Image 1: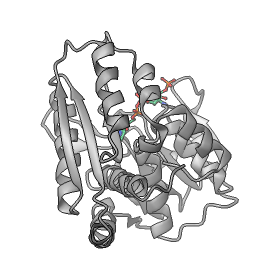
Image 2: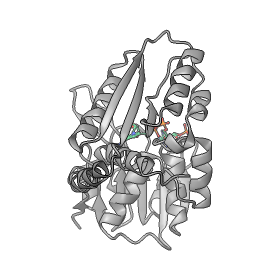
Image 3: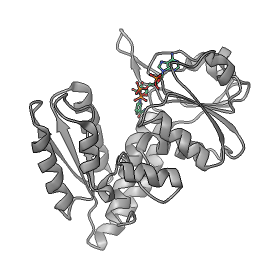
Image 4: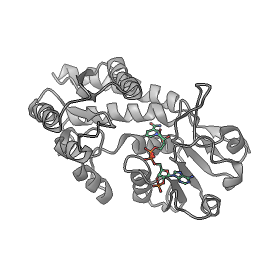
Length: 283
Ligand code: NDP
């Protein structure tokens, strides 16, 4: 079997074209979706993610701004900025780029964002709504993964989905979204004994470990759908996923590449959430 590649880049381009049209319509009604991204400090990776988000917003005609704060900013100062953005009716989506410096309690910041503007979907209220299946902002990477599965009409109901990784931003929520669509879900993590015994049973395998090329074809059931979330930079500068793409492609039915897989979908779903916020769809 040679796996069909699910291109996040192609799907993103299609979705962004649709969103651009939707924004044009919203503008005719006087609504300009606006995303504000708060960047604390000067971490190069964070700066690159933030400028990617601004660029993508501009491409579809969305208004966006980056508020830059120094590495030394206090939690109180950052909370003041968020409070101002919460009150500003022209700001529809607020995203605070993580990680934050050590003097700032990340959870305090996440919980200070108005849940109706929480386009990252990290606020406990929105996580709770996701768990109970209410309409809300879904966290962008898991939402992007589900959108990729839907784009290929991959059936989820009754399937055994195995998620490797249990972070709050990827592993846990993607497992929940798969469960919401009636998959039987198994979570694996660094303390899992005999990882292969679980992955071999997966109809759908989501890999979010953060270590290069851990999953080879030996870990897969014939015909599995493989979603590679990992982004790892090798010493020669190239990017690779957590899955050995070449080897896994021999066994999987569908596979996502790295780069141009889940990565572009994450930003696309952020744009989608911001439009949803501008339309006032999350109460
Ligand atoms: P975390 O480091 O928060 O979580 C990694 C998870 O992998 C943990 O649950 C850890 O287990 C588990 N793990 C680590 N080593 C192993 C192992 N050998 N076997 C099984 N499980 C293991 O990472 P994130 O969830 O934030 O990100 C994961 C990857 O996805 C990273 O490469 C990141 O860059 C990428 N990413 C990509 C995004 C995209 O848009 N494409 C968005 C977000 C992340 P334990 O809990 O026991 O420590």
